[in-house]
Length: 540
Image 1 (cartoon, rainbow, N blue to C red):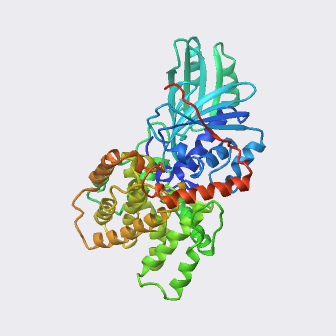
Image 2 (image 1 turned 90 degrees about the horizontal axis):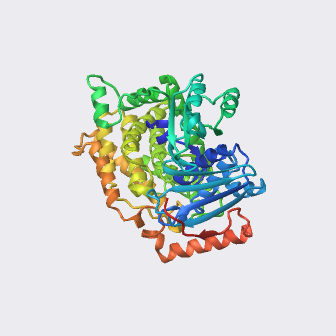
Image 3 (image 1 turned 180 degrees about the horizontal axis):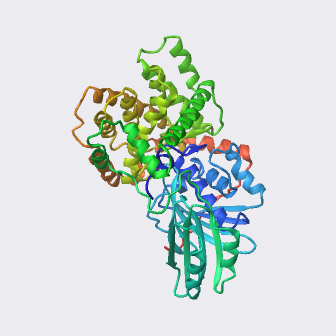
């Protein structure tokens, strides 16, 4: 899938502590729900013991997101914190088990879904920032990213020609035929709109067809046939811009217009809407948030009081940025609405730096949106080559990416050149290589707040250095390649597994125990998920 700024980088708009867990799980749940046409009786969820999810699925919101998705809810739905109870109340039985299967990706979801008429299986991964890939349905290998309307037709091999004949009458972007076994195939049809009911009925009536399923897209920007974008790397971006006096934000607009089949005005308008959501969330965080299952209480309010009373050290606009980082992180931890930019765990650094500095410069919301678009171009380059998932790359993938994006945004706000924006991004990411991910008590709060502040502060410094024409030395593409290489050398325990760093200190373990006891006392064991059962199964 070709990266979209609004799919992969600045978004989704969501609730919950982690986009890799909450938003991605919700999207997986939505697709799984469609497999059973919304009629679900039982769900078995299996997490590989060697992955990140057995330790984090409850505290970082995978259960909440998955239950919301199985109910068909949106990622920003206000009911989401109570999704497990709502799923149980709807009559669905949910079991979560830990198994030994050796899944290669740490964020792998194995689902078995049953109703009174049928059963289906689905294996999907969360790839970072809320993005997903369904890799297997009913033991058939395929790839679904949620960026198309998908029709799945399982049938005898003898029915292939008739199925393809019927599908030729529809407006489709692609048709793929997958071998299930010696006797069966799964035909996957991708399109911009759902197959018509009459066409589905016609397919169902063909001899040898077992089922026809329609899966709705879960991403805001769809893909399409023969999709092309002007660049995907920093080197290609520079070549595309050669001979033009253009800014990074304008290049981002041109990229996303091509990616999403949008006008340039529509791209800017979409980002303005996101800026308004972020500003509202900042105000909500400063006003004060409450949520029982969290490590930190509200702290932004006191910081704001001291700042306005001139009782903090003078750090100029940076103090406002720190306030905004804190506010956004507290909204996230209280299940308020945030924007993954590029992830929920790193949701505060870029927006706080961009909006805080823009307000200090008396910039408009359109200027804020342009700066965020410039950040989106940097994030697109990272996402195309690498990942935002801390489970894969450590916090350098989240906080490091956010710092690079924010640095480019700040140069854009200052009317810096394209070269200066790219230099700032390079220096910012260089400064955060090797950063581990070790959330205390499995909650995305500590040291995540400090790392978001670090990323924003780093971005301010690197932006000023770039504006003064400091030499980044290493081109941005090479820095991204280096981050990917460093991630491969990083121990698994230091990549968001709750098995290393601050996560295994005595204090962290004590906090985790206290929060677990409080939650058990409050829900009376009725959270809807039941106990985690460890059951070894054969590799698949």
